[in-house]
Length: 82
Ligand SMILES: C[C@H](O)[C@H](O)[C@H]1CNC2=NC(N)=NC(=O)C2=N1
Image 1 (cartoon, protein in one colour):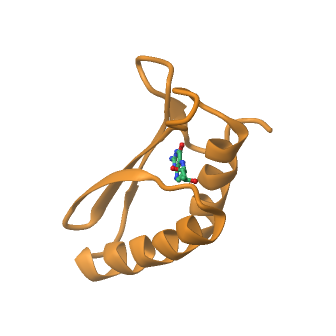
Image 2: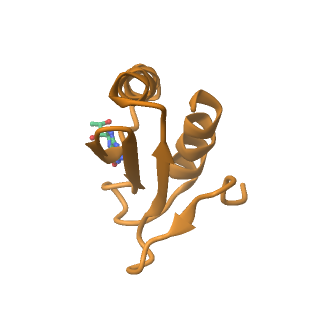
Image 3: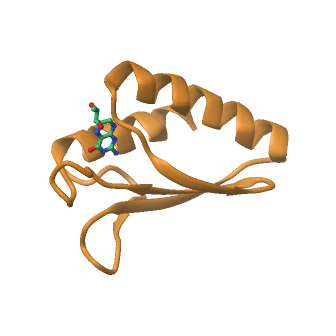
């Protein structure tokens, strides 16, 4: 799978990163809730930070210490939930 739209590889090469912006905190948190439910379903969890309307993701596979298909699939799902 190719790297989904808008995602970039982190400086250390071990993660996929993307920043999302929403109208306000409420929209950002609703989005995060959708992402959280999906993450539980697929048992693959994103690292993220939230500041008001912004959500920054850092996707990596801890088990292997780098980017795997699971991260690319999660990135694609996050795009579709945004
Ligand atoms: C035991 C459990 O399946 C693992 O710890 C899973 C859970 N979620 C995970 N999420 C991420 N991002 N990387 C992992 O390696 C990972 N491992």
